Image (cartoon, rainbow, N blue to C red; front, side):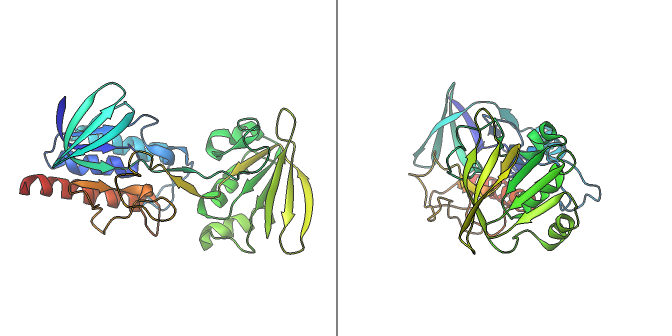
Length: 305
């Protein structure tokens, strides 16, 4: 059983930030990641609001820099799937598919996954025109017509990105106005390739072997209608990846972990950071802040013990 000081579960921006602060503070730090190092932000094509960077960069570029920085300070990235966490007194046992680790502290940073619409045709046509990542699949729709479902920052930013390839982009939103910040809205409203459909929900995604159309319902006039599209991108929120800790920690009604402002939970030395935490704003900058606090306090917790 390998012994470590700080075990970080999840290598997104929060996890890598915790790794930077933990390793820089002299802690033996490991980061577990079963998927892509960097988390979902690596799928974002343009980041324009991360402090200190005047030039727009991709999520992939930013996460590569964070990973290199964490590893330079001595953090180890372990590509193993964490299957179970056991709390025994002051120590935390991390069980992966391959090994068992004993850690003095934990920073839990598993993030969240895209929320699905839950309508007929969505599961059947997944990867056949239904996508949750515009950056990944936009190039498949060059010269075609697509729909973006959602009205938040990510939905509108990715819809704008889609216009680099698609001939037409419908933005379908269930409310009468967007939730995205003003600067992003302005860019979308000024884009001639984008058409907005407000007060409308998706009732069904239609198609035989691939997406062919959407059955929509306008909530104001109570009418249903159909539009032809070649693809549909879903950006309607996120679901916390809380399977490992749902029986260990306090959750809110949506399943996000409740912490104090120091990322602390009811378990001493167990911190929760990033998108899985109940918080007001889920952005790279807030995730890195969470991670910095957890990494700093993990060092302090161990020193006091």
